[in-house]
Image 1 (cartoon, helix red, strand yellow):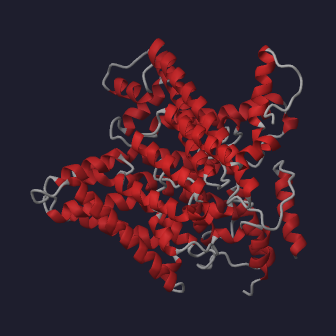
Image 2: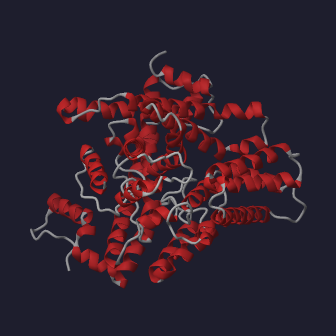
Image 3: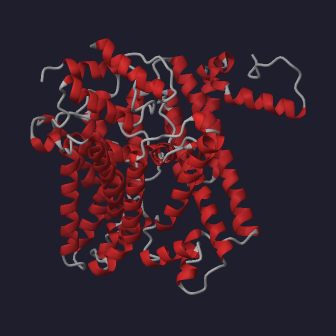
Length: 78
Length: 493
């Protein structure tokens, strides 16, 4: 699962011509590395593949900002 | 120790290029990095940044003194950075509580109805103190009641409170003391609204900044618009320099940005001298008003005015954004720039990201994501389009509308509302343009050729925003119809 999230993010960066190695704690969106449209793609993937409910009022976009955040979100019980 | 890395002899243009390269790569130069960690280096870097700010004449003397004192104090007492930042920001908020001149004028006029002997400054200070106290109370309550539905939707709650205050201020007799106090509170509240909103949203995250510090940070001491450049502590802390060397590099980047902003300031002044002075091209605003009054300029002059306005606007946004980001970087936060080569954009969405990054972030954080996460989840295209509409259309309009609501104090609703029509059109046209841009599936690729990849997409983006600027006005001068007529007249219609 961990590899899947990292692979998805790396693929997104490569598609946008940003072949950088992102560490687990590096900000992806707040740093401007990926834009809000990329964030929507990632959110759709989180919903469809991992069953994450983004409509939960406890959810905050800062929860998606690093690969580590994404992994925690996916690992959290529904 | 050498800051120019090349060993070859330097002469004429060649030497200039070498100095340019040395300057641009300064933050990667080990000698410069080491110098920037030393006390003389720290003082020198700060002095040059302050000098750049001073020479630009973009800051008042009082504002410059506050920035200089705060930056030097933080540099000398880095462990006190948070209280120094908050203290300076609170001080700035008390001195400059409003972001728009209209609010200052309204509160000045309203202070005349207060009992004799109560100065305007007392009304202003009381309003700031009340907003800070109310903000702090809300943040403490939100922290203590995390599971409460209102605490979970803090921005909606804050907007509701502000709207209610606005309605009451509008409804009470305008000659009453209560009216003066309420309008002052509404003005301070909306001028600090987005800082408070970020503070409230931050409290839901893992960021450990004390609530008291969040409550005191309702305006950056560096000034600027109502859009929080650098958002709030949650965001800033993500970019905090981790060690002395990172701090030195961040400061070198800040220095480079401040000097770049100064150069751009010179470009704007030169452009103004040539375009407005030598060529006598009027500002876009004046050209629109002249045409509305039946004394319009020639079509060529109108086109020149439109194009000059576009580039001038890009430069002005870049300049003050760069200066503010430079000040924030001097404190050790490696935040991204506000403006980053907008002319390179190949799509409307990319332009927004590059033109005014932190305003785009505000719209995305508070309007796009909340809508995207909740509505039309079964249809991706509609979902993205609706969220885009909520951000670029609804959010964009709400931001500008709320900022200018002082007009309701003196005008009837039927007189005040038309002031906002151009901004409403602007927001809706922008949202529509962005939605169409997103629906178009084929993004330009290098294999499409130089013209189709490098030139045409950028020209399209330029043209769209250049024309949209005709409607980007909330001054109340130049109605929507007059602005529409001006746009059509450019094509002889």
